[in-house]
Length: 530
Ligand code: KIV
Ligand code: ZN
Image: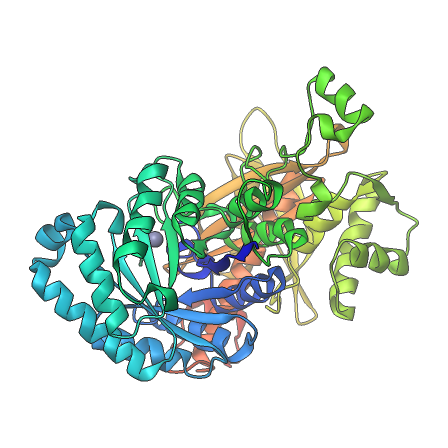
């Protein structure tokens, strides 16, 4: 009888803490809703002691997302554990996830503690967590490099103190698959009471082995897998959720386990994360990359046309990737658009549909055929709940191979239209500067990437921008036939988010948030105060 493997998603914690992947509260909530749709069993919403933002995110996710278990991370110390519990209290199914390093390398150089001291700390920390919450996960950090007999002692201490889940992380992505598998079998066979405890994998991709090791852990007895969307995470990342889920799905003949992930939500989840963080998915990324189902070689195309099974081990629809069918043109109306979005799995609200329709008309004006992937790019540009302070009226740019480029921008705010121009080395830079001149809040570009959506001359540009405003980073994404316009819109989206975040913090909407006193963003976007 196949057994269920529980999917523990840590995109909002291990993923979010990696460089370039940070999300604000609204973005984390949007992602959390998608993870719920995807069907994850557990979502780790943050590390509450790490920052006020993480605390608020865990609290907000706990209050809203009711089906899955919501986990919060805590070091094995009372301060962290109490803070995690404070953030989790409202959750329908809360879990405290506490961790302490157990390898000699970490004991000697990081913690400067003896093995005996660590064992005592594990018992106390897990005991405290268990006195607050019925579901407690313990992770011996760097388990992969921990002496196996000592690891058994640590796990025993945690189980005796009440741990319900034991997670054995390969924190530094060092293990080979067979070693990782054997570690699970070793612990399972030697720690008393394992029949009541779930074993969990947590792998990092430093040697490109995170998913392979996850499968090894499952063979060794793990029934929970920790992973992230698109494999984001510390350094080279964590095990990619979509990869191990599809490995188990496609090769269910080889491994007698299953997950309850809705595979058609894999591609939308990947796209949403990419939009929220501004981090693009590499084209050849397994399962969700643009090339994952593209057949270029003539011999492959010929085979696929005769029967897809020749070169395709899974169907793009299974992972929610749209087919390349022509769907709509410039004469299509709102109804047809709304129906097509429904078919693609998007339930748009009226204002969202209106927003999408405007973007669609702009596109259809310049492009004969609008493809599913264009429509998804439009949605992914975001109708997130963040109000736009400034909206775009016009982007115009002149550039030449000789000399500087000029951009002219017209933005509207509360019925008033502002326009300004700027020059720079390149047209995108000129557009950013013109936006800055109107908003009065200069940003610094941290990351900028352009991708084409769709094939050949008909393709449209999808631009992702990450910019720093007053010390904090925000991302924006936009699509257009015109790269400069897409860049300018993406940049403005980031600026609007910066303004919204300042306003939100200033309103003290979240627990413990300190009012932010007037600064450049506030003055410019909310001149009358807020
Ligand atoms: O990689 C790791 O060891 C972790 C733990 C906190 C589980 O992320
Ligand atoms: Zn980790």
